[in-house]
Each structure stands twice: as C-alpha cells, then as structure tokens.
Image (cartoon, rainbow over all chains, first blue to last red; front, side, top):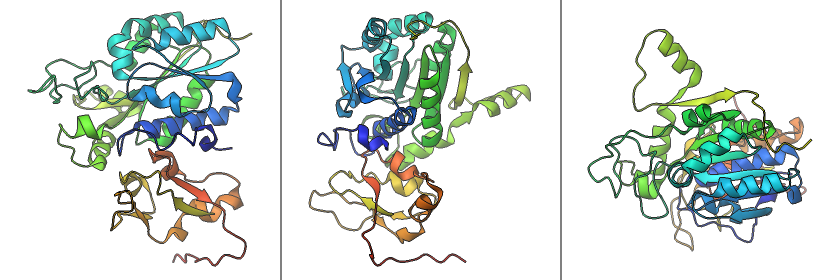
Amino acid sequence: MTFEDWFRTDRLPHIYCAGCGNGTIINCTLSAVDQMGWKKDDTVFVSGIGCSSRAPGYIVTDSLHTTHGRALAFATGVKLANPVLNVVVFTGDGDLAAIGGNHFIHACRRNIDLTVVCMNNQIYGMTGGQGSPTTPWGCLSTTTPYGCAEPAFDLCELAIAAGANYVARWTSYHVKELEKAVKAGLETPGFSFIEAMTQCPTNFGRRNKFKQVADQVEYIKTHALLRAKRDRMIEQGEKVPDDFFVIGELMRRKRPAMGVKV
Amino acid sequence: MKLAIDETRCKGCNLCIKVCPYKIFKEGKRPNRRGIVVPELDRPERCANCRLQHLYGRRLCGVCELTCPDQAIHWIEEQPYEPMKVAIEY
C-alpha cells in the first residue's frame, strides 16, 4: 500500500494553486499514516478553515471540516468520546495561532492524544493574503503594505511551553524528515505537534520577491537551521541570524497523556 | 518500473525539477490541452527507484513522488516484453 490509496482520487486534482506546499505536506502525512498500518475506519482527520484545512476533503477516511480555529476542540471531543479512534488534525497558521490560539495551548496543556500537523505558510492564503501572527518581520501582505512591524509567533516554542509531548518543525523541502517526524508524532502517546513551513506562491511569494515557486523553496531551504547547529552556534557565542528558523525534533518527553486507549 | 507524470493532475509548478537528485525532470516546451506546461523526462532510465525497487523490495528515493503537490508523479509497472533503454554509468 502507498499513500495514494488514502486519496479520494475522484476529487483530484485539488484546488490548491500551482506550487502550493500543502499537497506535499498531505503526501508526507498520509505516507506516515500508511506506515502505521491503521485501518481507514479507525482514522479520523479533523480540520478547521483555510487552505490547509481543505485537506481532509481529499482523504478517503471519515473527516470533520469544522469552524474556524476550533479544529482542536472538535478533535478533543472525537478523541474523548471514542479513544479507539486515531485522530489527526490538519490546520494552518491562521487557524491554529490566530483564532484558535486558546484551544491550542489548552490542548497542549491537557496533553490529549492527538497529532497536529500545522501547515505554516506565514499568511492567510485563502482570504487574499492578510498578515497572520506568523508573518515574519518586514514581510509584505495586504494588511501590512509597508512591511510587517510585529515579531512573528514561534508556534513550536509555544507548544513546548504549554506542555506538548512531541514537537518538531520541518519544511516542505525536507519531505523524508517530515514523514519521519509525523510518524514519530503518531507513535507518541499524548499531544504531538509538527509544524511544516510551506511556500505560498500566490499570496506570500508574489508580494515578497519570490517570482518562481522554486525561489521560495530555495529560501526556505537556505534559511532553515538544524537544532544541533543552532545549539552549537549558541555554545560558541555566535549570533543566530534573525531571519533563520530552527528545524528538527525540538521536544520529546513523557508527560501523562489524556485520552490514550488502554 | 518506470516514471510517469499524470498530465490531468500536473499544474506545472516545476518543483520536481528542483528536488530530483538525478535531474531527470526538465522544463516542458509547449503547453498541453489544458494550457499547462508539463515537465518532460530526461533519460528516466537513470532513476534509482525505477531500476532497483524490485531488487531491494522497498521505495528507494521517492522524493519526487512525495514532493509533487498535485500527486501527479508515480511509478507504473512495465508491460511484459516492453522495449526499454538501459542506463550505462561510467
């Protein structure tokens, strides 16, 4: 079996723009789910509103397309009502960090047995390119036409501080590593959070000097800093540049989890 | 096994050209019926997964298939006695 079996092939091709990284993240997630050997009847995909949240519509299992930002609240209900089910949440940065931020920190605090895959494209893609809490400093969007003047949200640090059991960040360029991280997250009892940085060529790249899709992928690739290298740089007293983001497995621990089947 | 690009799904983002370690994909020349410039295959017999997947019994590279955001790249089995090219690497 491959991840192709998990797609509703009659719904493809999907509506994402050409070069959108969300399709890559769906491939990696489904590949990891496929390696777990779960049955399609026992797997539920939950999502909120946004580009990323259209993903469960293309997956053959049961899915919930819920209200904006409340994907984690619905997923908590699904998991606690029937702990046998394996629940995977697809969400975007605007969905998770902006309107669903409160649900996010409390899901981390309760440590519910969910796997959350956050496709962070650093902008509100579906509604026309408004700035989101994760838009980097100085980047252009329709609501920040002179450059974003606010520091961006680091979702992985937030999840670690709030108490998630497994936290990792990869990009849409590092597909194999992302697949392994999602698989590790699915195997971990308790809340596992995987942030995937993706490109958004239509609304982010077009306004930020990435004319081609490959340009933004190249930027993501060159500005990703492995966690071990970041630690080494701090040890040697070097300054970590501001526009770099840390990738890798950032946290793995065993806090008591909620909703784990016995 | 051989590589195949599904022209009904491809949107012409050319990400496969960027990620393939063997540089098998190259930019297409003319748009197809839907107006999309689908990438072409440049000597696809060099693909490691095409040659060795059956021998090793597992997916070897598969980066293009995982990266393709439109799920357009996949491998298909050859017909019996289909003529095929063989890559010779020195």
